[in-house]
Length: 192
Image (tube, rainbow, N blue to C red):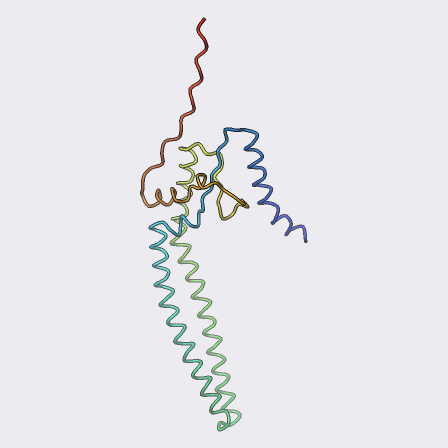
């Protein structure tokens, strides 16, 4: 395994180990996880973004399917006429068909780029809001670390440490986070 790949594999593991071993050194540290992608996808704004993208994708897909069907029919016609057309005429039709196939592939790539750009335009603002809410949860509830569940190499997380559903509610304008728990008051020194 080359060293670059080894670093890519080990870096998240080392980061998680540092977090967990560091957390054991200070017992009062609080750690939680959030599935950021799920928050974005299941929030009301995320669902609206997905619907918008689906409409755009469906209309583009219909155009591509029509062009692909037309090209398939042309290819079948070329195959049928291959025995009756002159060599030059056949080659001309095949060249034209190949040119149209390349154009279709180019259009397909352009549509994909357009969809990716539109997806970023629609989801980036949602992601920014989600990150703000995660920061707010961290400060109001006193979390020292909130890991992205999708990017952390965590084999197990207690369900009470998963803040994903709570983040979705907050993104959707649900209840505000509960105030951070208050530290117990220090016992009064004994009176003399």
